[in-house]
Image (tube, rainbow, N blue to C red; front, side, top):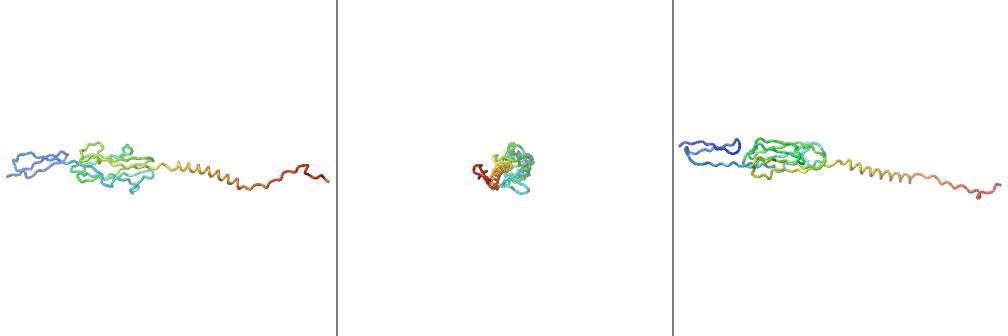
Length: 197
């Protein structure tokens, strides 16, 4: 009894299943269903990094790195995975992962320039929904990053108000502590004067 090697094509590109041990001339239909990928963020991997250190808050404008680790947690291979980073809906960076096998990971590192004001950073996996996944609802990570407004206008106002108040207080104090001239006696009236002689 001979053994025939048969290949059955999978739905995913580049995937083939080798069925071994089927007796020559065996009849029947072989069914194989490839699994779907599941793109997920590795726990606690989504973060902001400044000067090489993770930061909880972006305290000033300037360069910041958005980091995340992406994993394929499903049984199928993911091809041409797009990862998009956006700031308040405006695209900051986009990466394309050619292949992400089951259990495989990809480390995202994207530069972002923080500006003053509120920011909602999003990292979207397969943002256009081109890849059929086990779970489509776990493809978005959100970071809220408010960058404080400049303190200088507020400080300038405080200094101006305090300065004006300080000037008024100083002027009042200066006037109150200035030495006063000795009182000048009123001139004598002519009838109060004694007659000459």
